[in-house]
Length: 352
Figure 1 (cartoon, rainbow, N blue to C red):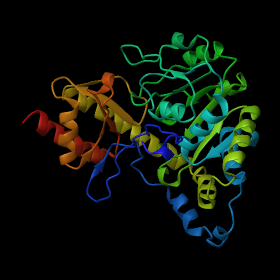
Figure 2 (cartoon, helix red, strand yellow; figure 1 turned 90 degrees about the horizontal axis):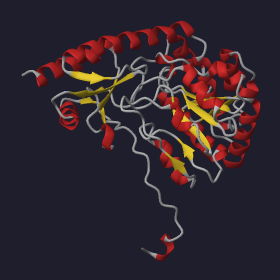
Figure 3 (spheres, helix red, strand yellow; figure 1 turned 120 degrees about the horizontal axis):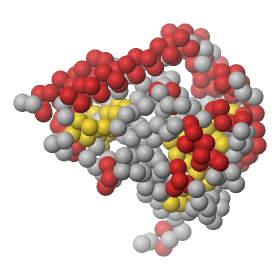
Figure 4 (tube, rainbow, N blue to C red; figure 1 turned 180 degrees about the horizontal axis):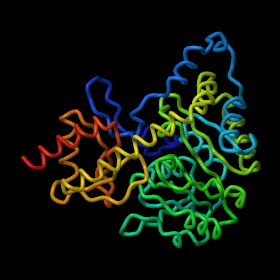
């Protein structure tokens, strides 16, 4: 090691899903929404004035914060926004997890959590999921420095009942509990009603999945005014201008077309349920997903073999090397047409 490297922080980074840059592929590997933003949104994009780009954006992102607060029936003081939910979550780790006690999150979950814990030198432990991949609430009924978990969980897609979330909160009222609701719009029960009861509860959401705006990088948190104030204090100590002007303006505009939003959700959920039946008939097994993806394994064909075969056919899904889940593929729910191409390929490959 060179002498100047001794004082450099070294971490194993998060590995994002592959982003192939060519036409003609079916991309089912990063849980993006297969449908474009609404026509109303596209009209707002055309109307956006470029002259304001010479100025710094509003550090408080008030236009977007106000729109989100109004949409959820909250006060603006209960909303925090950031550059995608990853930015919001990283800021939350930095803000709330400062104890010498370990933060708790599942052993199989969003793989950025342990990266942030390592980066910020936060002690952590990962209670194992049950054999059926469900979160065991009782594993979080112990002394800790904070709790975080997605609902639905990723990459399993399994949703936790609201009463189980409440149980975890009841046993953790002296630390911050973060529920990552990136996929909640696809069929899980949101913990939003619990915000009024637990001032230590923070919900984190994203525009990247259900709102078809992964490219804008918008995430937000909902919580008590105290939690949001602490988040903003850290943000303004780190980077005052985290959100760009187009994201603030267009993020607010995206909240205006509820009919289109609900329509795309219905199409994704309907396609998901159709795909489940087709995959079952082909010999796949999986737990009931409430997200916009299916986490499935085949009874005879290895996941890595299927992953490679699909990739050669320009169909991209996600495969993880983690020990407990290496037999599984995470398949994003695309359009009905995309999923039909996937099923046709699998029928031909698995039943030649």
